[in-house]
Amino acid sequence: MDDQQWDDTPIAVAARRAAYMNTGKETVPKPEKPRVITVANQKGGVGKTTTSVNLAASLAKLGCKVLVIDLDPQGNASTALGAAHRDGETSSYEILIGSATAEEALQQSGPNLYCIPATIDLAGAEIELVSLVRREYRLADALGRGFLEEHEFDYVFVDCPPSLGLLTINAMNAVDEVLIPIQCEYYALEGVGQLLNNISMIRQALNPNLHISAVLLTMYDGRTKLSEQVVDEVRGQFGDVVLRNAIPRSIKVSEAPGFGQTVIDYDPGSTGAMAYFDAAKELATRGDYQPHPTTGPIGVSPEIAAQLGQEDN
Image 1 (tube, rainbow, N blue to C red):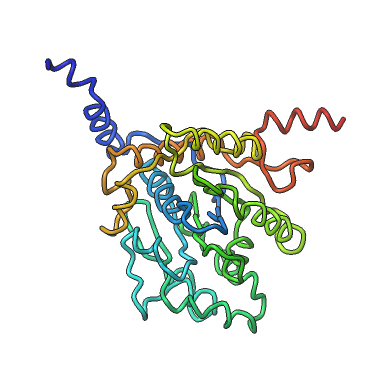
Image 2 (image 1 turned 90 degrees about the vertical axis):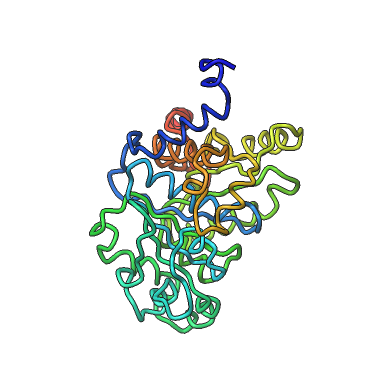
């Protein structure tokens, strides 16, 4: 094989892309104010935490300052970001019960990338929060005291547990945007209807700005008809709020947390890393998709919003 042929192989292309990814030369437009996004799906095993940390790591590589807040008692996001989250560490638990500030819980995970970790103490927070004042807004209050602006964060991702308790409600009330990862497998939309109902109820009762700004397809396998059917079904239900870039099944994505890393750092040339990198660029470039009165909590593109506005007139 001559040099030209070698340069065109998939391995060589991936290696060049991985090297370029780490140069910091590629950037995306920064939002005018911090975009605070909860990554949620009430069905487990859909890549929720994996999506949170890898989108965050990708945006950090793209020159944005990013914070991940781990609200899942399992602490998997904290593990993937290499954050200390042993018992006794200042964490999201202390923020919620009011014994520490967000500043005190903040850890740096890498260049441009920060984490507020979760510890096992968070498992009992649901019970403790019940008796506290503004129990649904504890996280929003902690972040709303100038913390995000002072640190000049561009993006904040909140990783919450796969259930609708006070932890998830706190996550929903601290953000405007919800990103839903949906796996391209059987029962892909299982639980999504309930999640939509819950988001609608929170919009009506607690946080009128809450909306679904993005849906990300995960565990995609282009070799199967099932994946294609799921893609068609999800795009049919959610429209153009679904990101064009889907995340393929990837062993490297699964391996990375075991080494205390995101796949972006663990193997930047892997298909999974490059897919998350492309999805992060798309999320940043297209901006926040806002809903139209006729679409409930689901965001639409500016073009569709304009079209719906004309129909209303």
